[in-house]
Image (cartoon, rainbow, N blue to C red):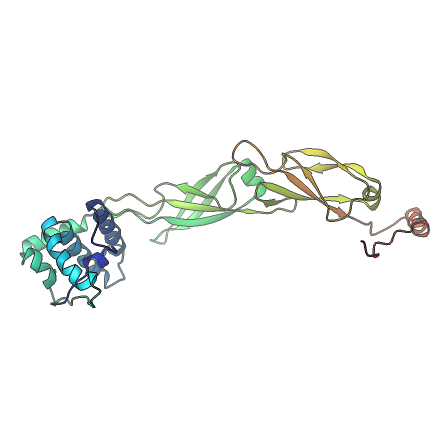
Length: 300
């Protein structure tokens, strides 16, 4: 007879466990290897039988004490062991009979029938959707369609709350895979990917946008009107501002989930006209003659 490590079968590292820990380990293992879930795994049924066999021995205080003595000799002292081989047609291993003896076919069928009725919660399903900054800022409703295990399409209506964060997940309770033997359905988790738009980019709770200025506005300074995500606002542009510099407008960014907002950060981009009138061209030539400014001069 070859020793079987019931604790390893239940993914337990020690024999010092509480009944509650044993029950949790058993349910997790039973769910993972239940034959109704692992239809295409020809070894799942054998693994499932090992799991039930381990639980029956370890859940009985008398048989557990007897088993633990063997376990300490074979595993506790780090001796080598291997899984026992089942005989053809055997429902319970020889190792199991040393704790409970031989069982009748009627008892065997009763145990198997009981095992088949263990409620197992369905698996969760995850998917994702892409939404614009404006959609997530104000909140929206989206319909998504997913293919079920039977190949049919199922449509869900997803309510996206205003101010949801990038990569945050929306949970639809009970919309995952069906449970087995009366177990609860799993849940559907939908990850939200916020897409940057032409107007705005999102970084944390701050929004970034472009502030386009003419060369004379940048040189002379001005007060410019800029679009925010909700309205427009006026910002002061100091004299001599350069492309790449940023102006921060407080409280005009993305929602922080606490009733406040981040900032709107406007990056200056100086735009030169591609076509000039004769008068504009003459003015630029005059400026070239009178100005000593050289942007290619190395600054200290």
